[in-house]
Amino acid sequence: MLDLGQIRNEIDGIDKQLVELFEQRMKLTKEVAEYKIQTGKKVLDREREKAKIESVTKLVKNKENVHAIDDLFSQIMANSRKGQYQLLEAMGQTLRQPYEAIDEIKKDGVKIVYQGIPGAYTQEAACNFFGEDCDNYDVPTWRDVMEAVKNKEADYGVLPIENSTTGSVVGVYDLLQEYDNYIIAETFVNIDHVLVGLSGTDIDKVTTVYSHPQGIMQCDKFLNTHKDWQRINQANTAMAARMLLSENDKTHVAISSKKAAQIYGLEVLKTGIADLSNNTTKFVIITNSRKFLKNANKTSIVFETANEAGTLYNLLSHIIYNGLNMYKIESRPSESKQWDYKFFVDFEGNIDDPRVMNALRGIEEEAKSIKLLGNY
Image 1 (cartoon, rainbow, N blue to C red):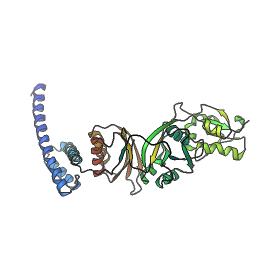
Image 2 (cartoon, rainbow, N blue to C red):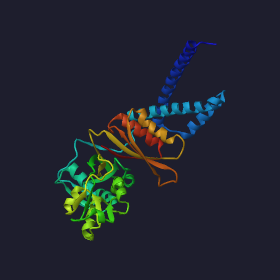
Image 3 (cartoon, rainbow, N blue to C red):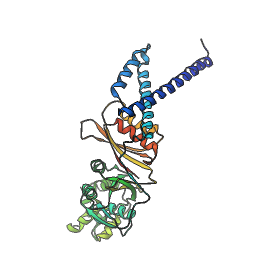
Image 4 (cartoon, rainbow, N blue to C red):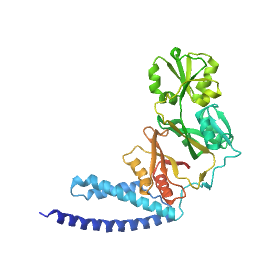
């Protein structure tokens, strides 16, 4: 029996051969890429790869190794494809639609649209980003924001995308895929919920509370101390505050912002009612133009994939292979086929960076569909 040192020496020798053979194989895949460029063939040939896996697994003598060989060659071919995508990008065979790189976002003389009414957190986000005196107006729904930007009735739109307490705003994600509008920036607003009511409201006599569904969720602990209150959803927190004026009922209260209370002349009945004190919402700034800041460092995409083993892993591996950090992934059911999914992914990088373009190229070649939502 060989001792451990001898066994390791033999393994080292085999590993050396494996590395040499792998590099020979990668050299040949470069020639394959050049051939595909000349003939216009796609990099991924699913039938060829399937046949290759079947043929190499038949060579396995110890059947306990079949799964490992399957996995090994799947990874080898995946890395071969990634090398071919890099070559395609280097030779100018890019699939990316043209985007204009800009130094800064124009904030003077522009019109901004947001969902809600004055006093909404979305208006606060707009004013934080574009300035308190910015030309802004409100519309009833998120879709109306998208339509206004699409039809160039507004230069920019502001939409909530994620809250640090309750998570993603899934309806906005769906609209980002549906419309040809693009994220150009993001901004953050600290959500400081307060309980508001008509002047002289007695909390002990309250029967009903109004707010946006997320506002209600974010104040769940406080509301659980008033379980007898009826909770009624509104389109946003500012609308909930304004409703109190029209009802003129001191048994009704709302969860909103201090700014909304000030605008509508309401009394702040209680502060600090949110479950978390560091409650923050991220908003995205959208435009109808394909533009990105030269110093942009985040890329957002959505892609669809079939519900097959390993498919999502293979697509995300393009981000990892190019040395990029993934910030977030969000899944949503696909509208095109039951049990297929679309994935919204944020990862680091600027689309002028070859690593980002290589990752996008690989995903675009292998996913059912992909859309670049923005670089910001």
